[in-house]
Amino acid sequence: MQNSGAITDNPLRLATLSAEQVIANARRYVHKQKIDARRLLLRSWLPEHTHSWTDSQPIVYFVAISAETSYIKIGRCHRITAMRSRLMGLQTGSPHPVELLAIVAGDRSVEAGLHSRFQALHVRGEWFRAGVELIDYLAGLP
Image 1: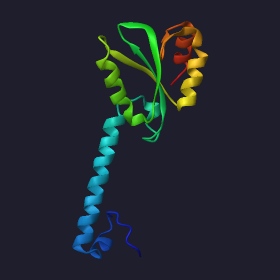
Image 2: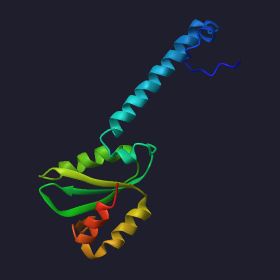
Image 3: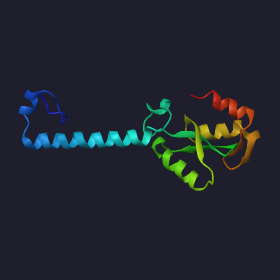
Image 4: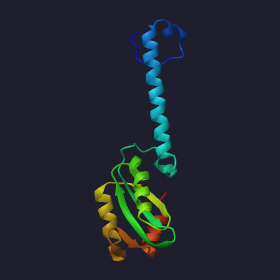
């Protein structure tokens, strides 16, 4: 039987490993647990429907400034795990709380399609008026 390098509950298998192999396996296990904990921390605040997406999933997000919900930003993030820092950056530039309204899987082309779809509501840059069409679209998202 080949050593897969994983920790096992099988005491006979553990008995065949050297002390160095057991220590190496334990270190790999602890490292994996730290990575899993970090992933959970980075992703736990996101909507539940995104939890099955890979960390590198590009996304399109919809953000509003809580006190001024008449404008919605349609932007994108190259990977879902970068969304928290993106929101923090937006918050730094806003005198009011920033609220994440929705997230959809998608890259630059999805974002461009949404910008085109809501062109009639376009204000400036990636900001759009919160018109009925856009609100209805957001209401239909998970």
